[in-house]
Length: 238
Image (cartoon, rainbow, N blue to C red; front, side):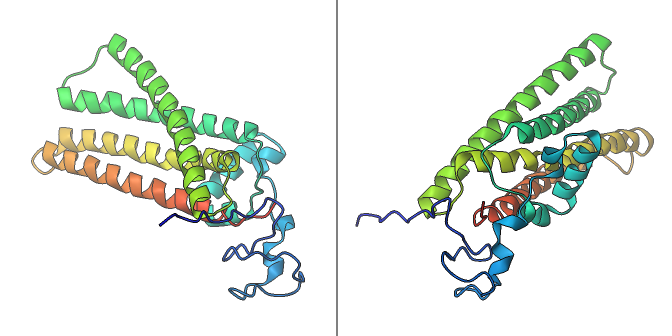
């Protein structure tokens, strides 16, 4: 049986941001016929550009990062939806650079633990450079791929999530890599200390188990925050 493609709402359609019902022509002081949410809560005027996009600065970068990390639902529910990704990309690049350096330092310390011997300054320098560049490039490519796949699946299912708004959302989602990088580095530092001072209680097997658990938790955390962002963008009104 041939599949009937769902109709994707037009960019000008007003959707209920709670359930996605088309609210065109309904009074602003009414309620959604589908879920009962107040129509006024879906007004496009409630969405604004992020502080970073309004005035790029160290303060707005920190404020936007804090909002994305600690209040992702509120951030993506209140952030405007548009195609311009330039400032959002710059926001992501800063976070990716920081995280790339953190993960490079983590890789150096991990190699030191595995080899159980100090690394030469030459090896440390090139390992830091190589891992930093590699992680940054991978994050850029993975983000673009994720945006394309998300937009494709959304179109397949009839959701209004075109590529560039999705990419912009994922650029802001880049802030969620920061806690992962910090926790990874702190874990390696703590593990190195424990292996050196408490070898009878903290073994290499336990160290490996902790790393495996953190990889699984990090993947779950990134997917959860990704879904929060996309869920609060798929019914967004411009």
